[in-house]
Image 1 (cartoon, each protein chain N blue to C red):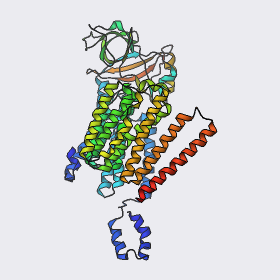
Image 2 (cartoon, helix red, strand yellow):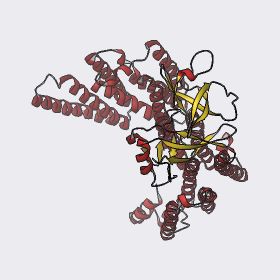
Image 3 (spheres, each protein chain N blue to C red):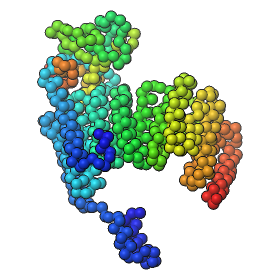
Image 4 (tube, chains in turn cyan, yellow):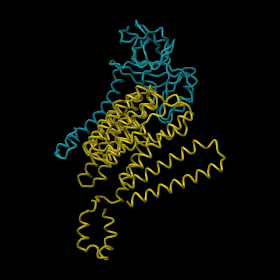
Length: 191
Length: 400
C-alpha cells in the first residue's frame, strides 16, 4: 500500500485498488446488516426487565439508556474458584425465566453448558463493589423510532420496561423490541 | 503568482513597459485556467434536488423496509464515489475530490445508521474504526490533501466518541492516524498537513491521558515525540509545521501554570513520579537531539527549554516563578535565535511571546501588592518601554 505514494504506480493498478477499497466498504455494510439480521433469524428470544431510572438520564437524543435487573448482580452468584473478576473482564451470566422476564442465577468466567430452559448471556464487568458486580451487556442502548422516546422515557421512569433480546447461537445479542408493561397487562403498546 | 493577478495587473505592466504584450501572453499560458466542467447554476440545481430527495428519505426512514434502507445507504456512498471519479476523469479535480469526500462521509453515516437499525452500535468500535481505515486508504489512493484532512478529523471524531461515550480508548484509531497518515506525511511532506496531523494526534493524546486518568504532564511525552518526528523530517518547513502544535500547547500550558499555579482541582494531577517522567522525557529529548544533529538543525534545540519541569516546585509563588523562568528562557531564546539568524518573522514571534510572558509575570507578581491605578500605570509604562526597546533592536537587526 505504501508504494502507492510513489508516482510510478500505473493508473490501472490504482483504479483496481480503488475498486477493491470501495467493494470492501460495501461488503462491510452488508456484513453488519447480515449479522444483525441473522441474530434475529437464528437467535433465541428472551425478555429482560429494566429497573426504573432517573428520568432525566434516560433519553439521550435518539436513544434511551436501559438499566436491567441483571445489570447489578450480587457477588455470591460468582461460581468460579479464585478471586472475583476485575473491571473489564468478560463474564457469562446464566439466566432462568422468572415470571415475565429472565433473571440471573449464576455467573461464570467461561461459557458453561446449561439446561434447555436456561440461557447464557455474555457481559463485561463494568465496575465492582464489595457485594455487587456491575455488568455491561452492550444492550444498554435502545435506538428509539422517531417520536416515541418521550413516551418510553415517561413510562420507563415509573415502571419497569420489558425488553426483548435475541441471542444468536454464536453469542451475539441484540434488542429486538421494547414493551411497556401496562398496569392491567391489557393492550400493552409495543414500540 | 496566480492567473488572477496576471489578468488584473498585467495590462498595467505592459503599459509601463515592464513586460511586452507577448510576454504577458506567455505568462498567462503558464497558469492555465481551471477546467470548469459545470457552471454554478446546474450545481445549485442538483444540490436542491439532492436535498429534496434527502428530506423525503429522512421523513419516511422508519417506514421503509430494511432492504430498501440498506440499498439507499449503499447507493448514497457508491453514487458519490462514482460521480467523484467521473469528474476527476474529466479533469475537474476539486469537484471530484469533494464528491469522493462526500462518499467517505456517507460511508460513515451508513455504518452508524445500519448499526442503529439493528441496535448493534453503541458499544462496538469496530465499525467506526472501519470508517477511519476507509479514509486512510482513499487518502493513499487519491493522494489528496483534502481527504487527508478529512481522515484526521474522522480519526478525532471516532476517538472522541469512543472515549466520551463508550469509556474506552481505541488504540487502533490512534495507531491508524499516527502510522497510516503519519507515514503519508513522512513521504509527502507538506506544511499545512503537518499542522493538521500534529493537531489531530495531540487531540487523541489528550483523550488518552484523560481516559487513563494519568497526570496531565504525561501529555508532553507523546507530544514531544511528535515534535521529535519533525526533527527527523528532511523537509524543513514541513517538519517545523509538525512541531508547531506541540510547542504551542507546551507554551500555553506553562502560561496557564504561571497564571493559575496551584489553584483549582488539578494541582494533584500535575506531578508524575519524578524519575519515571524525567527518564521518559529524556529518551524523547535524545531522539529529538539526534534528529536535529543528523539534519543539522541544532539551533532549534532551545525549543526544549519549554519542557523544563519547573512544575515540580510546590506551593503557589515558587511554582509561578518557576513557570515564568521557563517562559522567559524560551521566549528569550526565540528572540536570540531571531537575532542570530536575522529572521524578521521570528523576531515578531519572539517579541509577542516575550511581551505575553511579561504581562503574565507582571500580573501575577504585582496584582495583589499594588494600588490598582499604579498597577495599570506601571504596566502600561513597562509594555511601552519594552515594545520601544524590542522595536529598536528589531530595526538594528534588520539594518545590519
